[in-house]
Structures are given as C-alpha cells and as structure tokens.
Length: 254
Image (cartoon, rainbow, N blue to C red):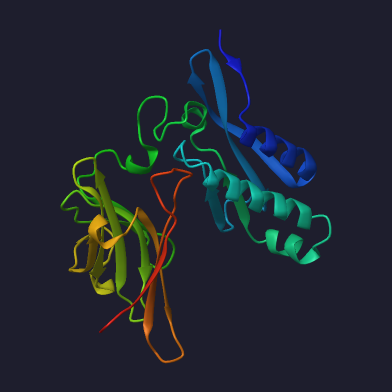
C-alpha cells in the first residue's frame, strides 16, 4: 500500500494555501510513486477562473537536483498571498487574469535527488517525445502555433531572446563526460519563424571549458544609452561544488 508524504517544499506550499484560504484553489494533477511513498503534483491557481481570460503559468522543480526553481515559485506565490491582505490593486488585476502555480513538477526526482523523474525521464528534454529537432511555441498574437529549430552537434536549446532588430538569439548548451560543457548562440531571422516552420541560423558565438565558461542557461539583451546591444549570459551552480554561477556580458558587433 502506498503512503503519502511531504517534501519540505510541499509542506511550505500547503501552509501558503492555508494562509490564502478563499483566494486560492488547489488541485492534485497526479501522484508520483517512489517505492511505497506517493507525492502529489499540486497546481495552485488564483484570479479569475474563466477560460476566457489570459492565464500565466509559473513552474519549478522540473529537475530534482535544482530545488532553487521551486523555491522561487513558492516565494512568489507567498508574496502574492501576503499582498492579497491589503493590496486592492492586485485584487483588481486578478479580476482580469488567472495565475497558475506548479512549484514542484518533479517531486519524485526531488525525493530521490535526481535530475530525472522516478521513471528516468528528463522532463525538460521530453516534449514533444517524437520531435527530431528542438520545438518552440508561438504563444498569443495573430498566428500562434509550434515551430522547430534545427538541432545539430548535440546542442539543446536553453533560452532565447529577441533583439531590438527583431531577430531571435537562441542560446544552446551541451555536455558530455568526454568533451565537457559547450555553449553556442545562433541568430534566427524573425521573418523565418511561423507556425510549422523549421528554422536555422548561423552561430555568432561558441565556447567551451577552454574559455572558462560553465553551464550557461539564460540569455537577455539590452541596449545601452550609446546604442550598443549588450548580451547577458548566466549560469547556475545548482548547489554543486563542480559548477559555478557566472554572469557574463558581451557587446554585439553588427
């Protein structure tokens, strides 16, 4: 017989739900078994429940070894619950949208301290399961849909950012025990992106451990007062002694 138990993150989440009381709705999406123990995958919503309003999702705990994502989502939810006690403007905003929180997507991986779920599936690399290339989605706008990015040299998409010019920069990374960490940035023309399209673009940046990089997984861009476009790259040490948290910036040369 399976027995339910709680991770610290799930216990904290239940306390927030209790504090939010009538403002929050909770449901169990599924339960994950690890040995004779089960863990719920909880979804917490607040705001207008109508399917006609926009919805924004916050997800964390996808990789069981990276607990910081769950902690950030839980902290954001807790801050909103606190504000609901006094912030009338927040109440008005929530009349026009719905917020959905799934702070612990992979409770089984967290319980086992593994990247994958208990079935050995890396949830960050498993959608759609029949895709040969990296899949992205156009959300909102006049032409929502799905497009694909050509996958090559064992790189996987980590993040992306739109440049002021409109082009898309795609940050990719790879890792193996034999070659170590590698990162690459490809530039994709925005005009090529459309529902059903398979897009590609030239690499404008690549680096490996010889350049003292790490597992870079975030990218952003901003324009300085002088008109220069600056890229910011970030890595996370994942609480590991063999990884580093780095913040790198580069000026683009057009």
